[in-house]
Amino acid sequence: MPLDLQVDGERWRAHLRKTAESLPSLVPVVKGNGYGLTRERLAAESSGLGVDTLAVGTYAELQSVQGHFSGDVLVLSPWRPGDHGEPGHPIPGPTGHARPEEGAALGRGTRQDARVIHTVSRPEDLRALSAAGSSRRVVVEVLTSMRRHGMELVAALAALRHPGVTVEGVALHLPMTGDVVGEARAAGTALRDAGLPTPLWVSHLAARDCAGLADALGIDVRPRVGTALWLGDRAALRPRALVLDVHAVARGDRYGYRGHRASGAGRILVVAGGTAHGIGLEAPKAGTSLVNRGKALALGALEAAGRVRSPYRWTGRQLWFAEPPHMHVSMLWLPDGAAPPRVGDELDLDVRFTTTTFDRVLGLD
Ligand SMILES: *Cc1c(COP(=O)(O)O)cnc(C)c1O
Image 1 (cartoon, rainbow, N blue to C red):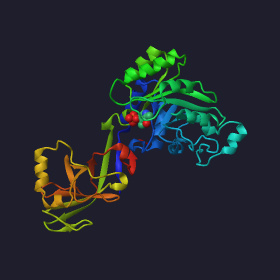
Image 2: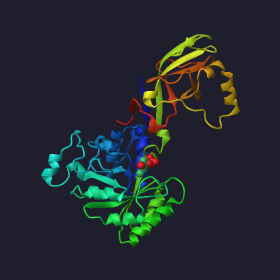
Image 3: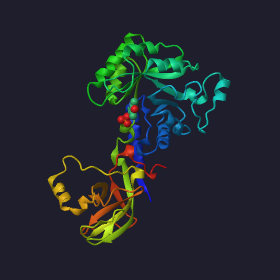
Image 4: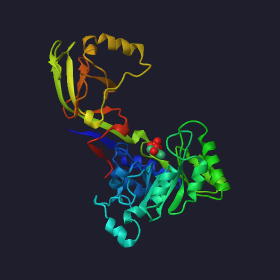
């Protein structure tokens, strides 16, 4: 009983290509639920784009991209003691089994280790990682106005000269507002003035700002992009939910887990998509019109039964949940008067892609 993501493959891939062309050193970000498309699929698409590096969110996500992408893989979460890459914590191979003996035989890390680029955000972690003795590849994260992870610039400059690791650049996780270009330029200038013209790995910078920065500072600027790449052309992505059952109910009929009574005649639509897919109750939007609020009030008993707006639409109308979503299906309320869908029809729905797990992604094979 599928909740599907129907992709217009040609259109979606055209957007990927256009984005990659506008960002010469693009590092696609493949993390979390793979922006609704799965990490495995996005890793394979990254290979098709011809990029040399992609980024995953965590060490736990490393394995999922191996086998789909053969270039370098940056881990965005800063390395901490106990993470892979530390002595005694080799990086898992594509089979899921760590292969420390192979690394030992080669006198360096495992073959996977050589492809992994670690993010380091504290001087003590750099020391611990360099103690691994195989010249791990690192980018040094500098604290930005976002204040998530990172070292102060002075500490970062020292870290860049740390022996025992291979420095691949400096990372800046920039917020989405403020003078982020100025912030990136200041960091890049400090690096250049310190005689360390190392690549700058940035997040959330526009293509023209990346190009401007690279030109002005004479360095490689590597934009790490997820949302604007994978979800940048929303019209290419169409979530759809199968209608599994339709039940006519009269006023007063009971339905659902809690035996609610219908406040009027209508239909219960049982549709694909529940909490297991990340379908949740949607809070009424701020600024909901008076008409809608009036409608909500008019629902009376049903409203008291916990009815809230659902993300599903039928013939352009947003539907209400008949009760909170179940694990794999949701029950929706369609009042009499509207032509009902039939079993086997599909409803459009609005979802947040980063929190939705689709049963199938169609249109990309
Ligand atoms: C998630 C992440 C990105 C990508 O973010 P989008 O908004 O999806 O492009 C870039 N940089 C860092 C450090 C991240 O954690």
